[in-house]
Length: 284
Image (cartoon, rainbow, N blue to C red; front, side, top):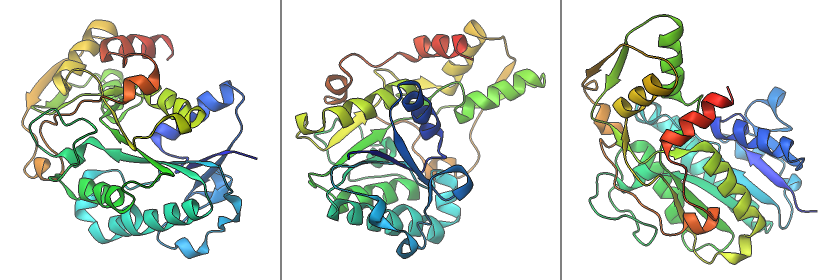
C-alpha cells in the first residue's frame, strides 16, 4: 500500500505538513532523529542502523531532514556534511532502490549571487556557502533520476518562521527590533509549500521535469516584513543595521530566482507575502 513517509518530521515545514495531513485524514509515517516524536528513528550519521524494510515500492518520501542553518554548516562542516550529503545520499539511494519516490528539499542558495532569471532550466554552478554546496552536491548526484524530484525553496514564510518568532519575542518583551539589511529573498508562503508537496504526490507521473523552484514573485527584505508586521499585526520600534562580519559568506545578500514549473504544479499563483501575513494572523 502506498504511503507518505516524512523524513525529518520534527522540522519547521514538517509540522505544518503533518497538521494538514491530519486535518485531511491522510495517513503518514514519520521518521526523525528523535524516537519520542516520530514513528521511527533515523541517525543520518549512522545510516546502516536504519531498517529500510519500512519503505516499499511506490511510497512517497518527503525528505526534509537536514542541518539547515548556514552558519552551523559553516562552523561544524564535517558533521553537517556527514548528515546533509553522505547520510542523505545513502538514504535516498536505498529508498530509490526499493522503487519509492522521493521529494528532496534543496535551497535557492544553490544559485548564489548569479544574476539572471535562474528558473528551473538553469543548472546552478555558483552556490554560496557550505549549506548551498551540500544541497547542490545531492542534486548533482541524483540529477535526471526519475524517482526523485527537487524542491528548491526560497525563504519559507509563516507565523512561526525564525524571523517572525523574533518579531513576536520583541513585541512580547517591548524590545526594539534589530533588522539586518540588505538581505532579500523571494519568500514563499509555507502553505504553498505543503500544497505543492501534496499536489506532486497526487500527480507524480504528470511531471517529466525534476526541479521545482518554490519562490514568490517579488523580493522581500527583512525591513519589508517588519513594515508588514507593523501594519497588520502590531507596531514595533526597529533599527536597521548591517549584518555581522562573515554573514554573507554563508548566504547571499540577494538571490535571483523564478519558476516556470511551480505554478502549474500548484494550479494557481503563489501567495503574496502581504496576503500570507493576513492569513497567518487570522489563524494564530
